[in-house]
Length: 323
Image (tube, rainbow, N blue to C red):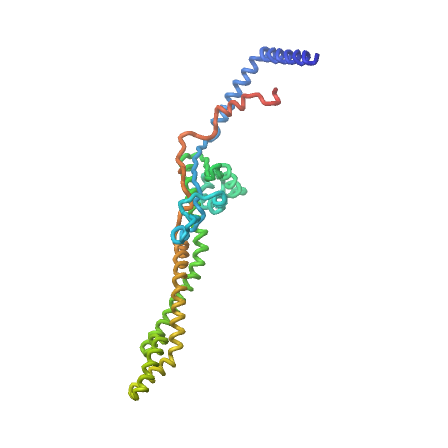
């Protein structure tokens, strides 16, 4: 019984709707046509915007010195290796930094470009909101970074997207260089102090060599044997000369031995420090790209927004409340 009532009600509603449409067909057609005209006019009043997209993969998070100068059997510092999720998230954090915004806002005079009155109320907030409406970054399912830029000028959209991608390298290098520069200055001072101290030791050893102290242990052994032989031979002159040499060795020998051992130790330390010094110097003075560019942004041939047929369709379609 209830199924029959439902069917009858449905048939009645359909018949009523059809009767209503036929009765009011002219007003409905007029309203629909007028709405279509108005929506088309509205769509033409909307300034078209063009989309440009740049896509890149983050590189492995390794410093230039580690990638080029450090032995790495496991390939952890491979500069040709794509970065992972951690590197992609770091890139997004850099992309969302205020410095990138301010740099491009100044370069392209975005306040004027977006028709924002700098003397009006909250111009920076308006500019930031406008920027967020037109510029977006996201990490794709492939772990790459996508930069989308909408603009009224297709050329400006492409240039902005490419400049944003380029600034990632600039900022990353500045961050690394600022830290490496401080370490380099410390390492440079320590390295030069070590070289200077080793030169002082070498100069002192040169003075002792001129006094006849060459190799303390070898000399003391040789001269002592010759000295006792001279005594046995009753060679007074040789004994006197050898005694003078033994006195010189006794006076300067321990100092010579100590400085020689110290110098050998410092030479080994200098080799290690020189390696670290060269590595940190590279990080402090050289730049590196931190991304693999997949697609550079190019000017779009077709506008991305507005889609006029969709606007007309949305305006002329009945809303849920109408049904």
